[in-house]
Length: 150
Image (cartoon, rainbow, N blue to C red; front, side, top):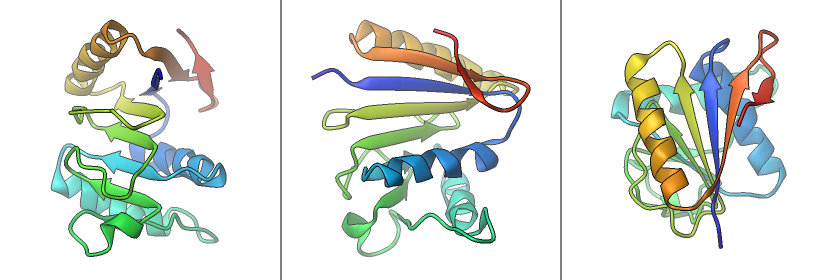
């Protein structure tokens, strides 16, 4: 089966602002989620962010350094393992996908103001296209809404 791969080019908001609503949408659809970061510092910052991003809501989640990772609906990790059997994989800050077998969807979120993340996204785009995946590219408009560009 082909993997649906989405590239989200952040231009108007930060990762901390954009990620929680996207993860919420996945949970509303009954999907389990893995979020892969490039560093432990970013993983730990997102761990806090997902509890506090709104006064009236939080995203139920855990990290790969805690017990019961397999039971988490959303798991923050720094590696390619998938202990919670997620079907959606978010890759942020240029985190590299090691293997995406078993996933239905992969989502790359990258900061349009960060040259290293842009370069990584271009390489990931080429690799995902070459692998024959169903790849789409989304960019934020001035209103922060996502617009499909490719």
